[in-house]
Length: 78
Image (cartoon, rainbow, N blue to C red; front, side, top):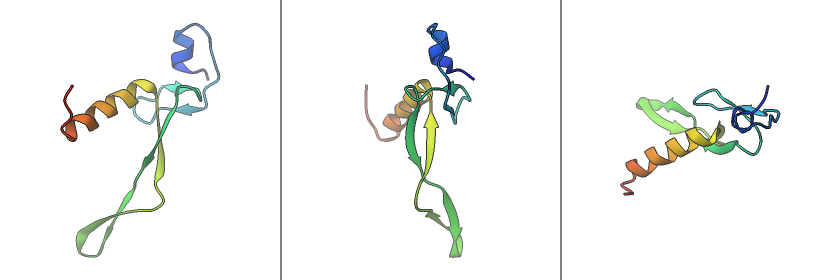
């Protein structure tokens, strides 16, 4: 399988991952790796983060979209 972004630029490169959001195949250069905390329900329905965090791998387009959502949530303005 080839990286979607590289193939669209005309030079196919082997993919090493699949974007967790859109499912596009991505190469090492186009992959964005970030921590992703899983949670569990503890006593009295309390949500607790599980350590260590898992990893989330996204393509550049989905990473930019997530960055924009995070900026809106934290009150940043463009």
